[in-house]
Image 1: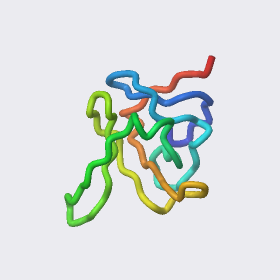
Image 2: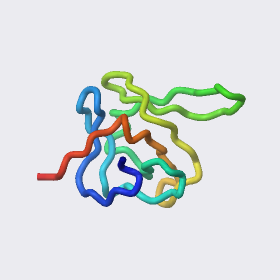
Image 3: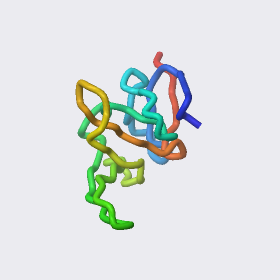
Length: 97
């Protein structure tokens, strides 16, 4: 839904409405998932070690409600070198006012 989206504004948790990502940090990672190089605030994200399927990854959840958002990887663009690979279904878009 949001992978190819050029919508400007914020992306919020679909479950609780917590602001998670900004369109200013969105980029095309070629992964097939909406990708961001940073969250709006580290205070809104919970990081959990994920070792399922024989891989070591970092799961990202909404810190407010615990909803699973996706994963973060260390292969993103500067300035953070992070790629937050997020499931579209976990987000809702809201235009900036």
